[in-house]
Length: 138
Image 1 (cartoon, one colour):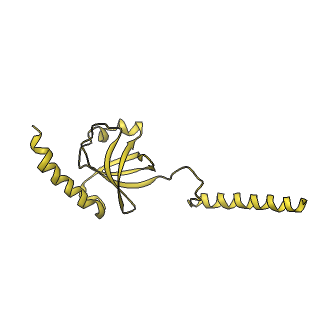
Image 2 (cartoon, helix red, strand yellow):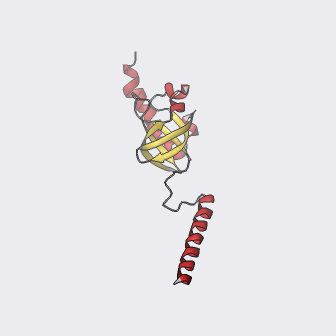
Image 3 (cartoon, rainbow, N blue to C red):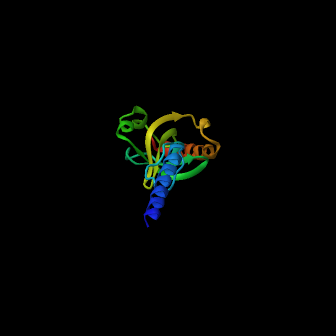
């Protein structure tokens, strides 16, 4: 019985060491709660009324999703974020959460600098802005 407990203890230590090794290499084991910081590109899809929640099409690793941009307090005070408008193209760093994309870093781009999967979205957005929104601005 004593020998069996020793084997279980050694197996538990081995599992923890293995988990630590995988975590050090950036491998997710499923039970880790913290999301890693990812690079993403986005196009603002609606005129932002609430600067704390902005609807956008986001490309993460060449897959496009409709997500809400959730800025940190530091990003909210950034002049880029204060002047954000529909169809602006962004390069972002942050974490993907259930409720959206938590933005920790932002830079405005020309839409030609977006990944190919978002360039069509940006072009359609600019056409929509020119035909539907711009004529009403005085």
